[in-house]
Amino acid sequence: MGTYDGGVTDLRTGKRVLLAKPRGYCAGVDRAVQTVEEALKLYGAPIYVRKQIVHNKHVVQTLEAQGAIFVEENEEVPEGATVIFSAHGVAPEVYEQARERSLKAIDATCPLVTKVHQEAKRFAAEDYDILLIGHEGHEEVIGTAGEAPAHIQLVDGPDGVDKITVRDPEKVVWLSQTTLSVDETLETVARLKTRLPLLQSPPSDDICYATSNRQHVVKEIAPECDVVIVVGSTNSSNSVRLVEVALDAGARAGHLVDFAHEIDDAWLTDARTVGVSSGASVPEDLVNDVLTHLAARGFADVEEITTANERLVFSLPQELKRDMKAAAARG
Ligand code: SF4
Image (cartoon, rainbow, N blue to C red; front, side, top):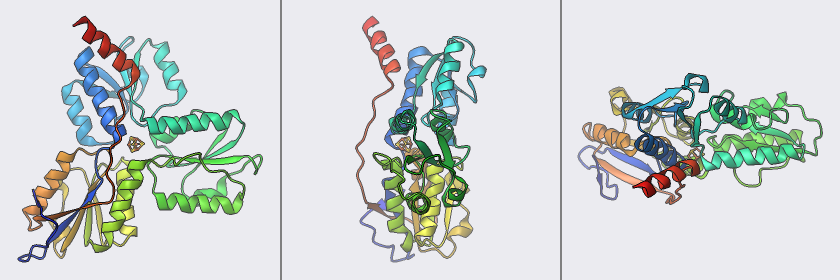
């Protein structure tokens, strides 16, 4: 692994790495992964998990090896078994299906996604038209839209603005997926406002702190980078956004990799400065592997660029904590 020495460029090779901080695990992912681990310890394998608990190949494979079984829908879970809902959240009908099958459901939805669900329910109850900015087909968007399908329309980026229709232009609010590009969302909102000047904004930012912090630091380092390597999976929205943000901010190239061995030596041929970051669902071990891989190719000097320090921690889901407490009391 590279040396954290204040980032003096290696005078022999002229090569360096700019390592973005914050990167990697956010509080919601940390909680979701711990939820599966603790459930496996408490109830024993197998534990069923509906959808990928977080969008990261390595995390899913590691939990599978410990006894987690990932399924797409509740019907695949045997009646009466334990099922964990992923960090991305689910529509109310998914809880209903779980009840019908007598499943023991543990909800690992990130509290910041739950916050958007609550906003959707509140505005729907007040009979607003809700414009949900997000990526069509993403699990989080499906879950949020499921809270109030009759009131919610999806706006998939600035080009989706022309397709929307509202009942009352004075009673419209926009909400968003938590893992979008901050800049692109601002552009979408600006375009919406040209059509709907009285459009209301969410009570607080829906794009979460982890998404915006990771984008902010990548924007800082990108102009100096010949190539930015983001560690993350292709189905991870916030990871994919980091590559786009890097390119928009001036990086000459950007690539998403799940593992260090996917780095093509050709990407490094003429590079002097390589930026490294990772999505919110990526364990730090995978970043360390990338740094080791780069060091072996002459990029041994690593400067960590920090634009924020994150301390947020979420407690485990209530239903799991309750069972853990009961088990501890039984000794
Ligand atoms: S990226 Fe944001 S919304 Fe998603 S799990 Fe992490 S903290 Fe929660």
